[in-house]
Image (cartoon, rainbow, N blue to C red):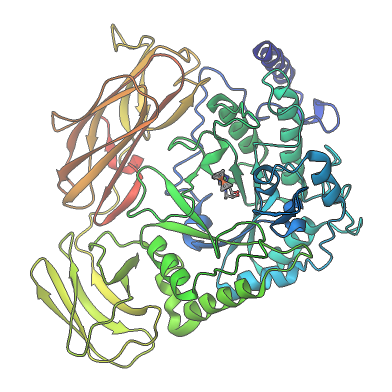
Length: 611
Ligand code: H79
C-alpha cells in the first residue's frame, strides 16, 4: 500500500515538473513535499551532497568544535521524579515516561502544568558563549513526542498543552539570541515517537511520517536551523519503530531539497557511515579519527540528559576540558549537554563548569588548541596529553607535566622538523631535541594550570607538492553487475564520491539495480608518505594501485569500510583501478585518502588523471 502511494506521489511530482510548475507552490497549503523539490529521485540521481570533509557547507562544523546540547521537554517538568501509585518514587529523566511506566493520561496531565517561565534565551546563549561553545542543539521533540515550539501539526506542544505563556515561543527567542551572539542553532528531533498513535503500526506509519515532514518543514521555515540532529532511528519495540534506511534516504533528500546548507547527523538514516554528514558517538570519545566520516561526541555534564533533581554527580571542568581536547585532537566535535529544570533554568553547577571551561579556553590563547584545530597526524598521540594541528602549528596539551628536568616524547609519523616551541602563558623555554623515533620536549618551568598546559610547536611539515591539475578518472559504466561486455557509458568522473542509495544510479540510462562501474587512470599524491586508502562501499568494491590489488571487498555487503596502506610518492602518477558492482538494494562508493600530512578526504579531482 505504502509503496503504491509513494509511486502516485512520484508520478504527480513528475507531472508537475513536466509542466514547469514549481512543485513548492503547486502543493496544497502546508502540505509537505514528500520528495525534494529540486530533483525527483530515480535512476541518474546521486544523493551525495558533497565531500563533508572539505565542503564549504560543513566548514563551520569542522572549525567550531564545541557545542551545547540542550535536553528540554515535558519530562523536564517532572525534574526526574515520579510518584508511583504505591507511594514510592521512580526516577529517570527524559525517559521517565517509559522507564516509570507513566500512563499517557497522567503524563499529559503533568505536562499541562509545565510552565518554564524562567527560560531565558539570552542567559542560555550567554552560558554557551561563556563556555566557548559555538553552536547550540536543542531538543525540538524528544521520544515523548512533545514539540517545544508552537507547531500547527498537533496540540501536543509547549504552546497548546502547558501552563506556559501562549505568546512566547522559546525557539524563536533562542534563535534571536543565538543570531545576536553569532552562535549557530540546530534542532534535535526524535523519529521514535511515544505519543503519536500512528507511529508504531506500519499501516499507519505513513500518516505519522507526513506529520513529521510537516513539523520539520515548520522548523526549517520558521527558524532556519544550521543543523538537524535526529535520534530514535534504531530498531526497537515498546513502541515498535518501523524506521528503515529507505525512510532515511527519502527524509534526508527531502531536507536537503528544502535547505542544501543543512548539516545533518547520521541518525537520519540507520546510523551507518553512509547516513547523513557525521557520526554520533554517545557518551564516549573514539580513540582515533573516525574512518569515512566527520563525527561529534555528545556527552552529559552529570549522568543524565534531561534535568534530574537527584543527580548531583557533576563531572569536573578539568575532565570536561580534557575531553574537549581529546575530541578535537581526533578531528571530532564535542556536544556537551545541559538540562534546564521545570522553570527553564540551566542548573547552576552546569553553568559554573561551562564557565570554567571557557576560562581555560580564553586563558593565554589556549583555545587555539581547539577552534579550527584537528587531528595532528604528523605525530602519534602521546600518553601525556593530546596534540592537535592547525596549519603549521601543533598544540600539545599536556595533562601530565614532567617533573623538573624531565622530558615529553613525541613520536613522529613522518619527516617533520620543529622550528620553535613555547608554552602558552609562560616565559619558560622549551628545548627540543631529536630522540629515537621523534623528539623530546624539555620545558624549563612549571605547568601553567592543572587542566592542561599547552606547548605550541611551529613545525615544518615536510615537502608538499603543489595542487595538481587533474580532471578525474576515466569511468566506464555497465548495465550489468559483472562489468561484462562493452560499457554503456564512458566518461570522466571528477571524484569517487557516490551515494546512489536505493533509487539512484550513475546515469538515467542505468537502472538502480544491477550495474557496475570501472574507474581507471592515475592518482598523484602531494606528499611522499604512507597513505591510507579508504573505500566506503555497498555492494562490492576493489582497488588496485600500481597493478596491485590492495582492497578486495568483492563479496556482496551492506555499507562497509575497507582500508589499505600504500606507499606513494609526491608528484608521481600511480596507476589506479577501481571496480564496483551493485546488485540490488542500496548502492554506495566513496574513495578517500589520508596520510600523516594529509587529512582524511575524498581524493580530490585535482589529483586524479585519466589514462
Ligand atoms: O537524547 C539522549 C538520550 O535520551 C537518547 N540519545 C541521547 C542523545 C538515547 N536514547 N536511547 N539511548 C539514548 C540509549 C538507550 C538506552 C537505554 Fe535506557 C537503556 C534505554 C533503556 C535502557 C537509558 C537508560 C534510558 C533509559 C534507561
